[in-house]
Image (cartoon, rainbow, N blue to C red; front, side, top):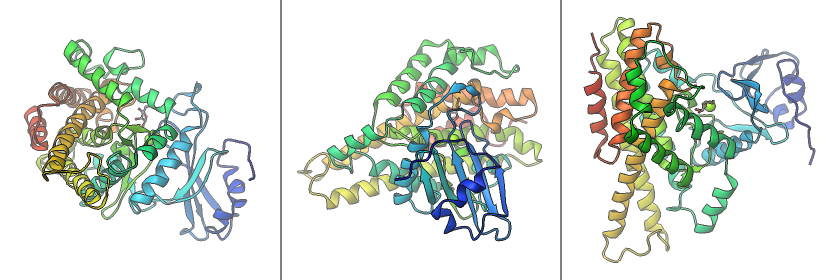
Length: 424
Ligand code: SR1
Ligand code: MG
C-alpha cells in the first residue's frame, strides 16, 4: 500500500493531487482546466468544489480535515482523526440509506480527506429555511435516515459481540469533548467562550445558568450523552448538516459520529426546527408575509418527522423480531411483552429527544456556536425576542421532558410561547 504523507491541500495543489488518483481519472476526462473553489463554511474543515470547466458534469467535493479547529485557527489543535469517523459513518449510512447520503468516490486516511458527490443541485437546509423555502419530502426522508441508522446500529438488531466491537471502533474522544463542553457545559456556566446578544436580558440568561433544577437536568442529559452507547449517531444532526431540494434530501458531515443515545440525533434535528420557528416570527414579517403559513409548516415538519421516525423505527424492529430466532428480549410467551417493551422504549427515546433538543436550543443562544436563523436577525431587540422564546421553550422542555405524551404537546408549547401568527 502506498503511504502518502499528510499535507494540507489548497486551491493551487488540489488539481495535481487529484490527477494522480485512479478514482478521479475515472470521473474526470482531464485535469488541466478545473474550476476549484474553497467553500467550507463549517467550523472544522476545508471543503473544495472541483469542476471540469470543459465538462461541468465532471464535478466532485473534496473535504479535508486539518490538524486544528478551523473556526479558531492553529492555536486550537484538533487531530485529523475526525475524518476517519466521518468516512466510517458515511459508509455505514450510505449502505443503509442510499440516496440520503452523498456517494463516496475516494477517501484517504493518510491525507484525512474524502472525495464525494457534489450535491450541486441542492443547498444547505438552514440557508433555505432562513429564506422561507418548503421541502415536501423532508419529514419522510429524515425520518427514514434516523430510523434506519439508529435501529440497525443498535442492540435491537446487531449481535451482542458485533455491537460492542462497533462501539469500540467508533469512540470519538475529541469531537465528543467538543459537544460535552459546548452543548452541555459552557452555555450553562457563564463560560468565557459564551457570546451574548447585548439585548438579551440578564434574567433570560440567568434562567438557564442560575436555576439548580435546570442545571441538574442539563447535567443528566450530559451524563446520558456520555454513557448511553445505544446507536451509531450522526452526532451533529442540525439543519446545517442537511442538503436538500424539492425532491431530495442528503444528510452530510457526520464527523461527530459515535455510539450515543438515539434521542441526541432526533433532538438535534427537531430542536433546530423549533429555533427556526422562533426566528420566523420576525423573518416572515420582514418578508411581508403573514407568519402563520411558514411557521405552521415548520411545526408540522417537526411533528411529522418525529411521528414518522417512531413508526418507521417500530416497523423495522417488528419486522426484524418476526424473522430472528433471537429477539433482544427473548421469546414473547403471551404475545404482548414485546409490544410493552417497545412502547416503554419509545417513550424513553421521546423523553431523551426532548431533553437533548432543549440543550441544543439553549446552547445556540448563549454558547459560542450560533445558528444564523436567529443570530443573523438584523434587529437586536427582535433577535433577543426570538432568543428569549427559545430559552423559555428549552427550559420547559428539559424540566418536563418525561411528562410530554405526544409531539403535539411540544407544538402547543411552542405556540403558547410565540403564537404561530407572530407577535405583532
Ligand atoms: C466549537 S465547535 C462548535 C460546533 O460546530 C459543530 O457544527 C458542532 O455543532 C459543534 O458543537
Ligand atoms: Mg458540521
